[in-house]
Length: 228
Ligand code: CA
Image (cartoon, rainbow, N blue to C red; front, top):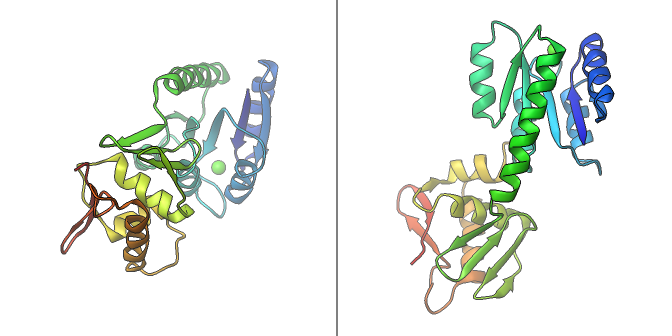
């Protein structure tokens, strides 16, 4: 098991690292947000991330959001005692749990074990394939899409938009939401470029039974996926 500690106070990071290593975990320590993303995007695969929210430069919340776009790895935030707002926005950004400073290392270790157990059991139960109707299958674990058993080649952004739409078939997404939730906040194209992506996805998925490529235009608002 490998754990990434994101913590700018080296004394705290050292204690966390010592406890974790004593229990047999491999540990990397990042002292700021950019370094954390560097570790996360490296070849190392982490089983859990312990994330301090108050960091110099890039904030913990943004690190959390960025990791969540790509991974379901359990994230435990570390917050200051007065940080109710932080806790709420951290959970909204996709963190699984939090612990308040100062904490007892034994409680921290128990929280880590509990989150690792939860993620192991949900990995088994969680289907990585989103199905739309009977014919469209989107595999988010390996970025493939099959339509009537035929593999469809989508670009990264097309894939992200399609899988975001398919996650919530009942929901209409505005262009702005699709940019924020599918492409991420660092996306620097125009809002209207979503229309081009949708046009391309439709072209690739359209068939006699799904002329719109499963995607409906909701005029004046945005798009939603249709199983019909
Ligand atoms: Ca800090």
